[in-house]
Amino acid sequence: MKIVALAGGVGGAKLVDGLARLLSPDELTVVVNTGDDFNHLGLRICPDLDTVCYTLAGLANPTTGWGRSGETWNALEQLARLGGPTWFRLGDLDLATHLERTRRLKAGDALSRVTRDFCAAWGVRHPVLPMTDQVFETWVLTVEHGWLPFQEYFVRHACEPVVKGFEFRGAESARPAPGVLEAIGAADAVVVCPSNPWVSIDPIFKVEGIKQAIQGCPVRVAVSPIIGGKAVKGPAAKMYAELGIEPSALAVARHYTGRLTGFIFDREDSQYMSDISALGIRAVVLDTLMKTNEDRVNLACKVLDFCALNQTGIRRS
Ligand code: GDP
Image 1 (cartoon, rainbow, N blue to C red):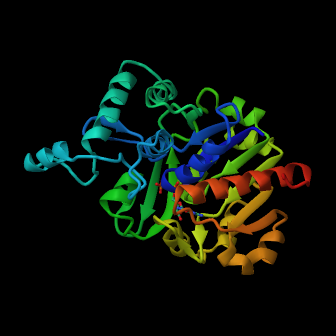
Image 2: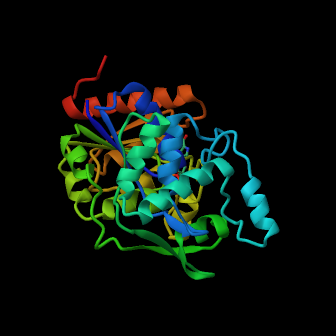
Image 3: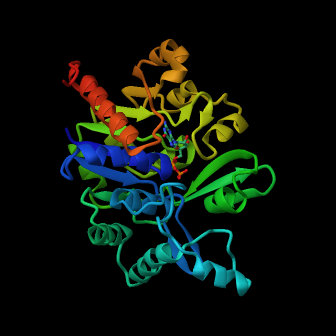
């Protein structure tokens, strides 16, 4: 079965890793949010792309979920000593990625090309595509500070400001990166990973043509990032609450209304089964918390089963 997975950073990367352990590079393409990308210290930083690639390469820091394992912080310490900005933590190993990416982009290479070459260098065999090669910026409207670029909200202000809304600047002119529409067009199923619906998945749908291409795929399945009314990590639940929506698996299913054929949510939230089914989508409860590599593979396996079930009505053996 050919799968396209839509992913943000930490939550998305975990399921993508499970899928990559089960599917060949011909069967899995990952499309990654780039709305979080920004310029910092003169460098182009692509947090979600790097999280997905480091995870697939086995280079990710297992504790944080982002950044590199075995990281050192010499450059950042020296930067602090010089009075430079250190709110966005860049380790020494990670810096090489941003330095070389920035050099390549300045020389005229597209982000998708650079990502492909980095993946080859890291031994990542599954195609990882940025959603777009163009600038596309997620901005967060906050009560305290007005409009903030995403990383200012997320890292500098540690997600503390109260959220009033989002804006995706550049969305009108951004085009899908090479290979994105082709991969979706050839997919048997699109899997929306358990990433933040507001700021990791919605941006991907906002890129001209991607939403329509996904609607053309017969099977479209999402995994809820909200378990027991809480985000496993990050501000997804807080965002729902601040926007006046009770955070829950049901809220996520409603968020994606019209975009999905199937929805996977945690066993802990089984009370929502009838409400979610009433949205006209096939729903299933599973253990969706991925603490170990084994959890990732188990969930990925069940996601594939569910996609097959959506496709044929017959459960895979
Ligand atoms: P970010 O860009 O690094 O914030 O990453 P994502 O948007 O991909 O992931 C954040 C979301 O992943 C949060 O809403 C978490 O609740 C969700 N998440 C993280 N780990 C898990 C997990 O093990 N299971 C599920 N179901 N969701 C998870």
